[in-house]
Length: 393
Image 1 (cartoon, one colour):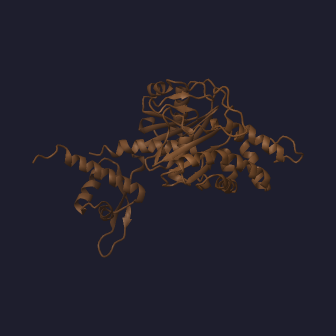
Image 2: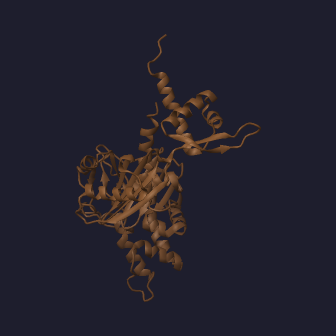
Image 3: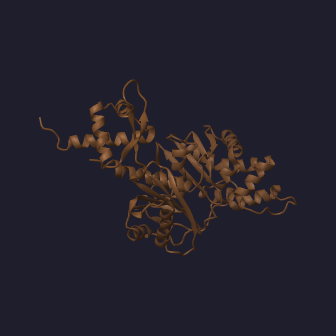
């Protein structure tokens, strides 16, 4: 009977990976605790820790008092063994954040830019500023993930088109990789918000849910079986184009505001609805501010008629998604969704229950800070940990 070459090495890699993931999720741990959780003997667990300590992936971070014997050393993952960067690119503004391998955010910066600025220079400058703020050399970054509006081709990873960012064209991914000299991933911004929601927010550890991004533009992040569903062309979730009763169908899909659902719940529609209800304007005139500010004012003023009508409009899209995917959980995000909070979410849930045979739970996002940036860091950490934790022997 022959033994498969490399099997002991493979087993060590698997054990190392399991131990590192366990230390991230449940650490710090003693050698005995690590053995209990992994099923490894004390000797094997000790050898594993020695190997990881030699590679500067784990270190002693404290002691645990025992019985009559000496205190047991507590081991944890070394946060500085790798760093990742996430970026959120919006028209005229870019935000960049750096996190260590444990997921702790160590720096976040933002900058403004022109419509036709070169993406490579833009990203390099933003990352450079974030590295300087964190005191981390760019050579220590293991993964770059960039969130942007528009459709990303799931086959090539490139931006297929982005109406809001004309400089982010087909071929920009190759330019970024050449210009930065590191692996780069581009992802749709709403998809990244869904990743952040599953890692840090209202959908934590939920395998099937839909994130509804409601703001100036509309979008969906669809999570099925714990994986993002991007669609054949990357266009899954472009809910602004959803045909709805009473709204005209688009005649030119190159016009970003012409989708039927976009006409019903987009920025202009929310502003018009706020104007009709006199939200945030004592004289009933056109209220100033963003759609999210109108909704926030409506919640503060207790403008139930406005909130009911807005919820009914949002429920049209949510119900359409629910009867097809039956996700069980809907998370409202974006400027409008977050501004409406649980007050708006509860109304949307009631409206959907009246028109849909299944009754999903509707909640508001619980991700703190910039959800797109947080999601970019979640994605980057997945990539970095795959690299670092798979190369231990």
